[in-house]
Each structure stands twice: as C-alpha cells, then as structure tokens.
Amino acid sequence: MSAPLTPEHADVLVVGAGPAGLHAAFYAAWRGLNVTVLEARHEPGGQLTALYPDRRVYDVPGLPATPAADVIAALVRQLDGLPAQLHLNTLARTLQPDGDGWQVGAIGPHGPQHYRVGAVILTAGLGALLPREARVPGTHPDVRTDVPDPADLVGRRVLIVGGVPQATRAALELAQAGAQVTLTHRRAGFRGSPAELDALKAAQAGGQLTVLAPAVLLNVTPTGAALTVDGQPRDVPADTVLILNGYLPDLTPVQGWPLDWQGEYVPDGTGGRTTLSGVFVAGDLAASGQDFKLISVGLAQAAVAANHAAHHVRPDLRVRPGHSSEKRLS
Ligand SMILES: Cc1cc2nc3c(=O)[nH]c(=O)nc-3n(C[C@H](O)[C@H](O)[C@H](O)COP(=O)(O)OP(=O)(O)OC[C@H]3O[C@@H](n4cnc5c(N)ncnc54)[C@H](O)[C@@H]3O)c2cc1C
View 1 (cartoon, rainbow, N blue to C red):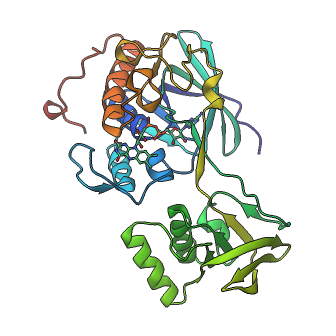
View 2: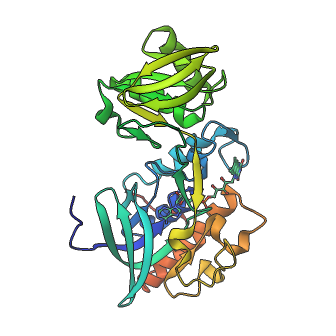
C-alpha cells in the first residue's frame, strides 16, 4: 500500500501506550488538546498486557489486587469521549524540528506516516515490545510471530505454539472467530487469567479447539508442522502457524533522538522536560524514576508531563490542571 502523502496533525503526540502513555493522553486530552498515541504493538498496555496480563497487581492506587490487563482496560476506558486517538501497530522512529513544534516519523500498518505536533511525550518504557523471533527449522508459507486480525483467519487451520498468556488468548479469540485452532506447548500448562484458563478447558471439552500438550515442535513443513506428542510423532496440518514466545523490548527506534540519553534513560527536569523544548518524558524511561519503575510512579510523572505539555502547546492554559471533580468531562 502507498504511504499517506500528508502528515497528520495533533497538539500532543504520545509515544508508547503503556500506563504512563495512556494517562498522559488522558490528561492532555482532558485539558482540551487533540492527542495521538503511537503504539508499536497491536494493543495498548505496555508491559502489563505484553508481559504479565494475567498477574494481579496490588499497588495501583484504587485498584487493589487487579489483573494487569484490567488496570489497562480501566486506563483505556478513561479516554472515552476525549479527543485522543490510539494508532496501534505504529512504531515511532524519527524526530525533527518543525516550526514551533516537531515532526515525528513512524511506520504504521499502511507504511510510513508523519505527524506534525506541538509537543511530544515520550513514554516508551523499556522500548517497543516486539515479538520474539520464531526459530523453527523447516519451511511453511505462513509462519507468524504476532496475532493477526481474527477476521483474516476465519475457516483456516491455525496451529498456535506457545504457553504465554498471548497464546491462550489467541487460541480462544481465533476459535471464537471461526478458525480451526490447535494449541500446543512443550509444557502441560498454559498461562492466562483464571477466566481464560477456564474458557480454554471448556472450549477443549466442547471441541471448539484442540490442545496438544506437552508436545515438542520438531519442524514446520509446507503443509503444517511435525510434533511429538507423548513421545509419538504427529503431523498437524495447518494453513497458518503462530509461534508466540512473548515480546522483547527494543529502544533503538528512539535512541537516536538527541535527548542526552543516560544508557536506557532520558534525563528529565521539572515537569518531565527533556533537553529539547516541547519534548517531555514520563514513566520507566524517565531517569528520575530509576529505582522506582512502578505503575504508580509513571502515572504521576505522566500527569505532570502532560500538563506541562498542554501549557507548552497552549500557553493560555495554565500548567496547573485544577480539580477534575470541579469540572464536567462532557
Ligand atoms: C513481570 C513484571 C511485573 C511487574 N509488576 C508490577 C507491579 O506489580 N506493580 C508496579 O507498579 N509495576 C510493576 N511492573 C513494572 C511496570 O509494568 C512498569 O513500571 C510500567 O509498565 C511502566 O510503564 P510505562 O508506560 O512507562 O512503559 P511500558 O509499560 O514499558 O510501555 C511502553 C510502551 O511503549 C511502546 N513503545 C516503545 N517504543 C515505541 C516506539 N518507538 N513507537 C511506538 N511504541 C513504542 C511499547 O511497545 C510499550 O507498549 C512490573 C513489570 C514486569 C516486567
């Protein structure tokens, strides 16, 4: 597909839809600014949805003992009705001055994209959480490391390899969408929320999908994959093979930005300011938080950075946001 010719505009561009990025987006949008959030993954949530969606988090204020995926769902829900857009599967790569603001270059689902923006809030955390490579011998026409749109796999035979929560969730979603799913893992157990694991058992018992575990994937073949299940060789026919091994963080797409990096951190001054005017940082990436890589700390930094960004873009807006309880949202 050809690249869009015209850049998109936003008052504030947030890079990374982890908890810090989502809360920064909320605050800037709540101040009345148009916000676009770029996220490299197919879903928001950063480390919480990529690495531990099924684990309970105990130290987010107001959400005791809440599964990480639900913490993110609440932050996303908080954007409802506000002028904030999420651009998923979009990796930010370049930053250039553009008049009083910035131009950010990215690769999105349809190719290169440019954004002309008044301010940037960098909440890239550990880096873009990109799928781990699939190192499997053999050849097959359709091996993937991330979950495609379920609509694209309706009626297809899909072999999912992996025990991570993403594999459990993909098996359920794709089977529900009408794919013929076989889920396999080298261990007997799968990870997922209690509800997802119950749903997996029910789907298996009801014949909506097949589970082969523990099993060893030997190689892929042009028509599927060769496994050993209980020590016995077994060929599994498959039109699509999904090898889901979780994610690895990659900071390199933004590490070329001239932000006076201290290793994997960006130094932050008052209000989350960086060395570049109009570029702010919050969350795990901000140097000031080093020993406190925590959701609650990132949320607070995001609130501060977003309000400073709002004032930077619209000097008529005070930095201080006032109390939400005294304002109407809609
Ligand atoms: C196993 C585990 C358990 C944890 N448990 C807890 C806990 O109980 N309590 C707690 O407070 N904290 C916990 N943490 C830490 C917490 O997850 C982090 O502090 C938090 O996720 C940081 O949020 P963030 O938004 O700064 O970054 P991240 O969550 O890392 O999100 C950054 C996002 O930016 C995206 N991104 C990066 N670069 C780009 C780019 N160039 N273009 C587009 N998108 C990009 C990434 O894909 C990612 O989605 C845990 C961490 C782990 C790994």
